[in-house]
Length: 142
Image (cartoon, rainbow, N blue to C red; front, side, top):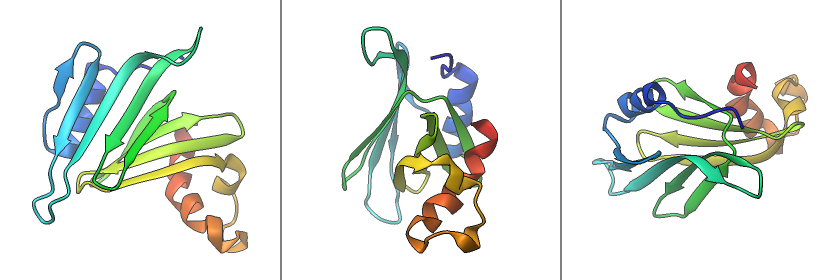
């Protein structure tokens, strides 16, 4: 994997979240709180995770009251103003994304065919319309 989170990336993400992370070597942890509703979330970014014998790369996780979400082999991210970070994993014909919002929202899209991101939305099956609309914005970093 060639992508690695750098300090400037962490600063940009921190600015969007409105809080600084705790740093632990080559990883960062944000403890996010939403004062409007009592829904805490812990977001962690790890660089250099060993995924197998010869595959090393970044990993992002989000722990919420509703579950634990993890995306491996991150190849990039996009700040989607005003309040979301989209972490992207490119799997050839497929893309997976973990979208984390400042208000402690979290969405995971997994194994989405890239062809639907480029499709005419009016021709898509309604079941895939939301993922196509949400993820079409990441096309420029794939």
